Length: 481
Ligand code: FCB
Image 1 (cartoon, rainbow, N blue to C red):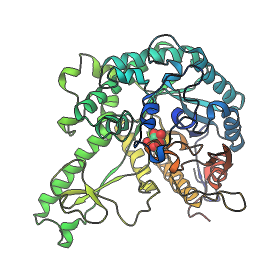
Image 2: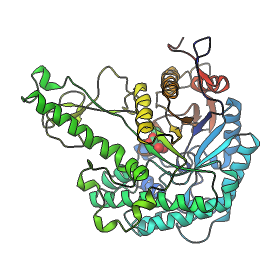
Image 3: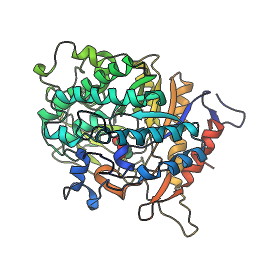
Image 4: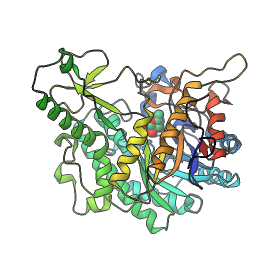
């Protein structure tokens, strides 16, 4: 595992890749029969996306996929995670396939195969056909059935070329950001709708897995965004600014806050897919009403998976505090346990998204999931950071923050493997700067810079660093020289 020069080596056959999503890169929003998705509608409504940006053109990868595949090949990448746009395949979310939509994915898959790059296809990365949303969207059970039918079309048309299928990307974000808090499409603020969407997204995953199994699909899994929940011992009570209280009570409150937050953020999707039950610590308001859970649903949801995809960005920190009297770096805790707040420690760097940088959190979450699902192969299906990237006078993009980020996180992944985690691959988010949802083009996550005016692509320093790691199948020892 550790080479003579101190580099941490990865297992043979490790899937080194990059990740993207259809709405974030394809553009061609209404070309060749594609129907509108909830993100087309949402981004076109004023006030929803920073700067009024939309995915109409994005990186124009619909037309430039050859160039993008060639870029990956030039970096030596072995795998590509992309998503299939449901409304490109079924414009209204039901009925016969749009053959031109499928042709695009066939062509992309052929191009990948020609360059020896293995395909990981995500079937749902947030672009629900608008017509299905008009009929209620994920809060309606019928949507899960429609999804299974769409998956059958994809499996039949593309199954011979896809190595790995991911049913859903981050359903937690769909339920919470899309239906509970409204900062993502379809922009609802409705707790009951979010709870119902949670169940139907899970059901959609289970039904899709069955469909894929029936056609003999190679590997099937789901991608969840997971966050370690950390408790900080030195809350405000300790320095006299917080509420008074017995330290045993405070410790008990913090532990209960940790369990509830973990259930809300991680367990709500992880437990049903792994164990066929909703987490006991989840607040009742987040759980689907019992009437929505039909006999057999939880068995359907807990289909055997071949792997679990993990998107890792940052942990959540909790400490004692007063949500009605917040101090610097504090926010009200989502678990709403009295006397507990969420907190962002000063010691940790923040990205331009405001997300905390904490590579140890990746190691921690990989070990935790391995404990909960022993033997299940894991893939890091997204990991990366936004940064203030710019083209310097030499025409280069020297994104040292991202190089450092990748270095520390890959080192954490290598350590997890050393500690017994069955990690089979890593997909950097993202190949390209792209449409970052409610933030539009403002936030850059790519290892490749995109000049959105000309569509010119420029390899950043992080792309070269990542390429070196991939070719060596090893990450150099820290610190970065
Ligand atoms: C994840 C999304 C992905 C991208 C990254 C930054 O939550 O899955 O599409 O936006 O965040």
